[in-house]
Image (cartoon, rainbow, N blue to C red; front, side):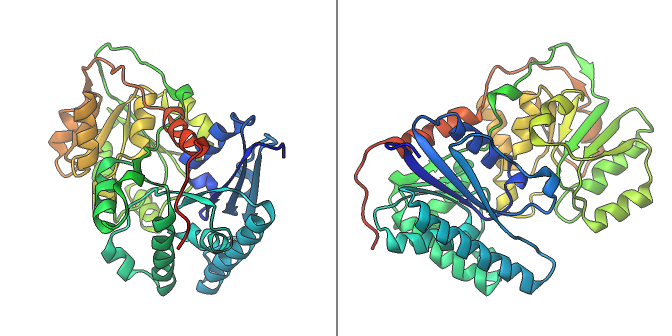
Length: 377
């Protein structure tokens, strides 16, 4: 590595391939090769053929084995991640740690105990309530305690929107408000595509991602699609269906619901642009869902689609209102009339643009700034 570069370690226990915003960040950092060197510590994706790779000499991805087939294997996976990531940290000696989520905290904390001058930035894809922590495993509760110690050191703590961030501030009132940030999960600028503003009837819906019955309006939307007898169709791109969802679709046996293999993230724009509208199906069963502006919402928007979003997602409704985006339709998925009354695209496309590059540039500037930070207690 060339002298003078900032050495960054990004810790993300979950497989990168399941979290496109992290891949967007890595791609962004790779373009700043003149000033930074980045190591990423993560776990294996089960599908080895779809592993994310990067050719940049300033990006190095180190993986440890991961499996969820049994309790013993899960804890072995956590142990191996800790050992490998910690040893790599000791060897590479990064000066900045970017830590994603609770499960990534332990090796970062151990390294911080050795190197009290290391800088810590923390980001969270989701919001986990106190009740969910208490209902979690003893190991997760232990990691939550480790995470709080890291938070006390962090110079940057971010959530994906202001509503989730406010909950985080309330949980940690003893942490300085100056370190809290909003860092939304936006797609790259290359995704943006403006469709014609001509009014048209929506007939082709699309969904890309995992589907389950308990927390999503799969049944309600599927039965409506089927009842329309071909007037509308729904294409699903997924390799991740819960068993209950698989059984439901098998019994429904609708010719108007078409299943497709999932596609790599960078190929999604070309797929999504073929359709009229994208659907989001979360029921809002907890605060994490209610206070979300899902990645899919912005991705559908960037590709010029109408977005059907459950009315329970209050942060998404606030986002629609703040930016005057008529293409976001807040739908009552329990009322078939709400479906039928939103089948016409009769709005002008919004000019608002939300990009990963703009958000990650703020983080990178914070990393590269020369400041004095408090030492670890």
